Amino acid sequence: MVASNNVKKLTLVLGGAASGKSEFAEKLVIGTGKSRKYLATSQIFDAEMQAKVDRHLVQRGDGWETIEEPLDLGPTLEAAVPDQIILLDCATLWLTNVLMAEREIAQESAKLVAELRSCEAEVVVVSNEVGMGIVPEHAISRQFREAQGRLNAMIAEAADNVFFVAAGLPLVLKGELP
Image (cartoon, rainbow, N blue to C red):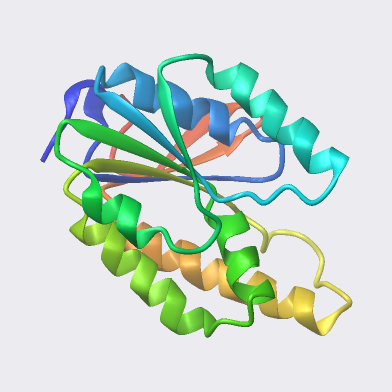
C-alpha cells in the first residue's frame, strides 16, 4: 500500500540524539494529508524530560491526536484505520520502559513488530541508533544497547522505508525518499 508523498505502510526513521529524526518523521506524516496520530512513549519523570516533550509539542504544531502510552502500544495500533497515519515516537523510549518494567525484552519486541506489521494504518516509527559509540560501562546499558540494535533491525526488516537522519539530513537505507 503506497500513500501520497511516498510514505509506505511502515517507515523507520533512525538517528542519533538531537539528529533531526523526529522533525523529519513529522514532515513525512504531515505530507500524507491523512488524519495524524502521535503515539508518545515517553514518561515524564523530571524537568528535563518535560522540557523535551514541550519542545516536541511546539515543533509538531496543531492537527495531531496525541496518545500517551509508554508500554502497551497494541490497542492503539489495532484500532487504527487505513485513512490514518501514526507517528510512534519513539521506539527507544518504549524499549526503555519495557526494560524498566522488567518485561521480557525479546518477547515484547517481537510482539511490537507483529503489531506494526498488522496495523491497518501507515506507521512511521522514530528510533535512536545507539550502537555507534563507545561500549557502555554498565551491564544494564550494554543490555539496552544490544536490545535496541536488535529491535531496530527487526523493525527495519519489516519496514518498506528506512531512513537514517544525521545532522538533519535524511539518508536512505531502504526504499526511497518522498
